[in-house]
Length: 317
Image (cartoon, rainbow, N blue to C red; front, side, top):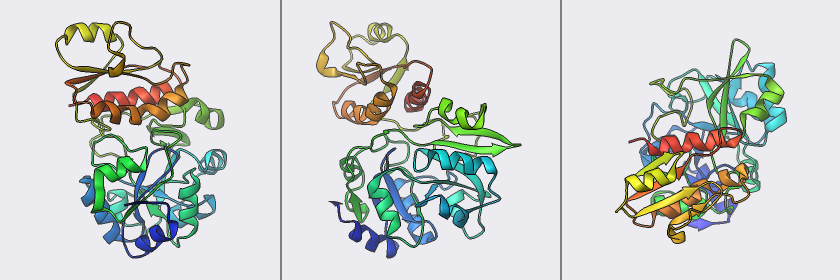
């Protein structure tokens, strides 16, 4: 059920229920971060493996010590700069954080979402929310209440409607090692923005078997339709001639190809706009009964790096 009634969502969360709610990045599937019954429901509904940790959402930086300890000064500097916003910090957890949230690790992922509905909801609660993206495990992330409703229907108590997500891809996740900032997941906050505050950052090797943070598994964000990513769209079209194909393109339509089977993310080459439209476009193409979706790789700078990360993970078998 889709609703704008925050009090109804609060009631369900206080009763160990789970809800869909909007953030600026994607819609989350939320429950009480201190209540293992609610957390188990999230894993069950998503069919998410419990070795994959979750993100805790707090209402403000003043609540950070409620979930984390031994917080480095740089974490506070970054939080003061980017919260509320699409930055998740990996920090040493407080002992009372359930192991189910952190996949039995001693660190917790935490952020303050930058969406008026999410912040209003958190203001009405006496606990933080644990909230992975509100989609079945490995499926395309949701950027509207309708996406969440289509995925889960009455399996969850309610979906709070906050409109389309403005950022459109998940938060950037960083941690700290030997006084250096380590990037665990590329996301809606560009690395260049982080480096203005922290100095140079280190990208973590993607091949770790045990994910330290959400969104690190190689296959993720995937449509049901076969999906490939390429720098040369025409070459792939020639290779797969005879198939019913949809195109996901950066800034221009391909001439002499059915315009109805093409989605352009930003004719202005605006990477923020492209990120905000990415998952919505993937959902649209996935509904078209295509044999194949061919996605064009974006420029490798700014948010283009994060978008390409999502496209690559979506293309994994």
